[in-house]
Image 1 (cartoon, helix red, strand yellow):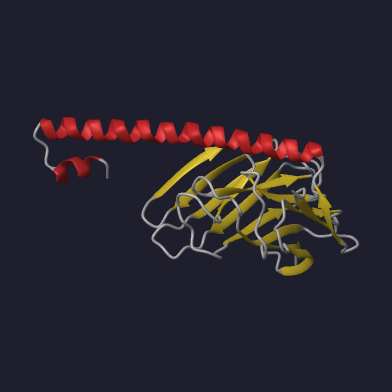
Image 2 (cartoon, rainbow over the protein chains, first blue to last red):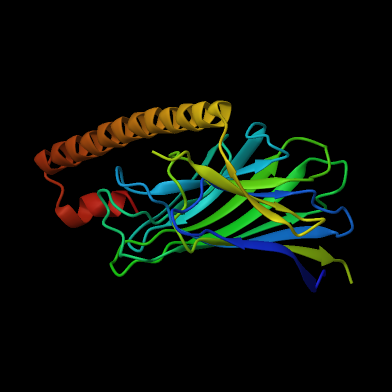
Length: 174
Length: 76
């Protein structure tokens, strides 16, 4: 079991937010990658924004199955987009509590190998209300290239708010 | 209005750079957002249709004489 987390890079959005976090030139010296984020969207329409992951600048060749809990119901499903979670946002129909963020863990084993890349996601929104989303994603990027860059952005095209943070860790098998 | 920016972190050098989105990146971002909004709208319609069908089925079962508890038991 890999247990040696090493911080590769981190970033926090400043005033005005950011359209995306791009981690580039990821070294191939680790066994696995883990991204830990605390994110919120500036979106003000609709209910809940979503988080997208791009690998090597690609948003295609993704698929996933998921489990969802809302605080009052549970469901499951599947899709073929690069969604890796849902995000609290600044406005819209849900009325997410101000300054609450979504916590997400994205784990990518064997990221530098030559097989398709599996991705495990555990994510939960924060909200001072009954409604809060918790998701587990089992995702697949059906490409064999080693992962050298990762991008996190919203699905709505809105910016991620100020104080959104992303940490990229490398893990070496012990 | 200022252009949106992204944060790029070079993991080899540790250098963080704030970069303005290019016209192509902005266009892609808008296209992605439109595609997702359209997909969301489709899902909302499908969900509303399913809920309407469920309510209709429950009403028909009630008309046949099933109690609310019996109807609820069917979906467990």
